[in-house]
Image 1: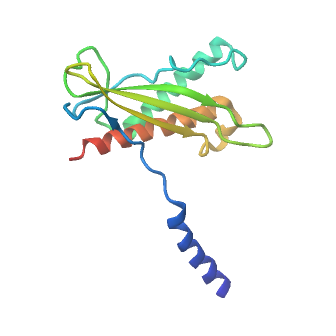
Image 2: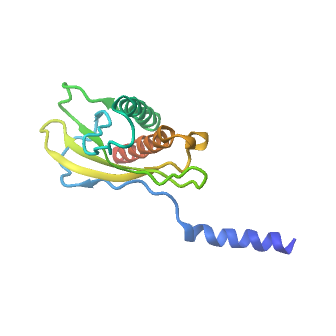
Length: 175
């Protein structure tokens, strides 16, 4: 019984030391913008050029389509007020998310986490002026059975990325 109490006490003491996951920071260069509505563009891979040795173009495009859907689904689950970017966005804020890097650390039978790095550029919809930036990463730590495929691990990264962006945008909307 003493051992159980001691383990419980050690756990309670260790939790504050371990910290918790924090939201990405919106590094704003301007505060002069209307916060709502929030328009979000499609997750872009133009800042990340995949190594040719990874997959064929067809397989890569199939992955990207799936990751974009996963990212958007997680984003609107967390922040339902997000609207898809269209040419009529004339007020509020525009978020343009990019994948800037992918790191493959998973090795079959050994494990590891793959990482997807995100950059989100923020614009004033009325002026099209860049007003801020968000940088963060998603990892494949919660991928479960999807860990057995590259597409599944990156899908978990995309899900985490969409969720974190949704939480960050939601937090920005609060006074």
